[in-house]
Structures are given as structure tokens and as C-alpha cells.
Image (cartoon, one colour):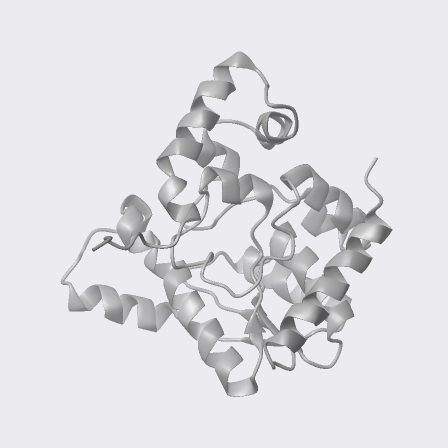
Length: 241
């Protein structure tokens, strides 16, 4: 049984330690309207109540996601701003004369989190803050993130928690029920949930991470995802001379 009061205290203390060690004064994070960013926002707010900035960065995002991000910001009393990057995104694609809809083109879709990363670092640098990530252990292990996009951060406070533990922590933190019950989606392609993209459920993935086994039909898919994304876990290799 996980003691989420203890988990919360540890993460909040860790955030304070890391931010202070960097000579920074607070946290900047992207608020997507999903469960992971809501949990991280709540933890960052506890660590730095006056110096946490939540940034809502829609790029062809669903109106519901933007509404949910603001719901979380209001619920937590967060300092938040919304910056629409859609025109930047389309200008970027136009430079390459691409006409393929982003929903059908993963390379184009991955530009969205990379633009958000650049925006977060700009705002963090302006205010002497660190960029705080929202990745959980289930995503990190399987590489379910955009390299140099949503994984381009300074700190990963919930990176040791599997997805179902993030849900449990959200309940402990008394986040809005709508956010807790919402089906997780990366939002890169319209209508696709995380589990649609992964090809297995979070239940199966978390069970595999915690016990080393799960339903036979999911094990091979999970292990393939882990192997395929190993390069995402490492710094770029340097050629030895």
C-alpha cells in the first residue's frame, strides 16, 4: 500500500532541493488538461506557491483540453497563462511546403510538443525557473513521449510513479473528478487515446512494470516498445577517439 501523504512530502521536498541547488526560484510547467500535468501542477504549487507558473499551450488542441487545463488552474489557484502556438506551428510547416494534415503525419504532429518545450524554456529563462516535466514511469519506460519535446525538461517529479499510482495520487490531492476520470490522450492525433496508440492498457503496462509479467498478448508488445525506445532514455552517444 502506497502512502501518498509520504509520496507528496518527498516530491515537494525534492522539488525544493533541486530548484534551490540550481539557483532558480520556482517552477514552470505545461498544463495540458490531463491527469499527469494536473498532479505535477499540484505538487509544484505546494513547493512554490508564489513561484509556479502553469502554461497552457494549445496547438490544434481540443477545446475540452484547454477548458480542463483552466479548470485545474482555477481549482489549484495557480498562476497560469495561455499562449496559442497554432500560428507558429502552421508557419513552421509552411516553410517546408507540407500539405499533409498533421493528424496523418507523426513527424509533423511531434513538432507540437517541441514547440511547447521551446516556449516553456523561454518563459523559465525569463523568470529564473526550472522546467518541470509531467512524465510518469509508464510513459518513460515505453518511450511514450516526444524526444526533445515533452521530455525536454529539467525535472521529472512523478517519473517514479506508474500510471495507476498517478491516478491514486490525484485522488489524494483532491483534483477535480473530471480530470481523474478523463481518458488519457497525448493529443497529437485527433480521437486517439494513449491506450489506442500503445496497443495495450495501462493496467497491463503497470502490472508488467511492477511484477515483470502481465497478459501474454501484451508482454511482447510492451517489451518491443521498451527496446525500440531505448535511445530516448540515453544521452546522445559520443564517438570514442
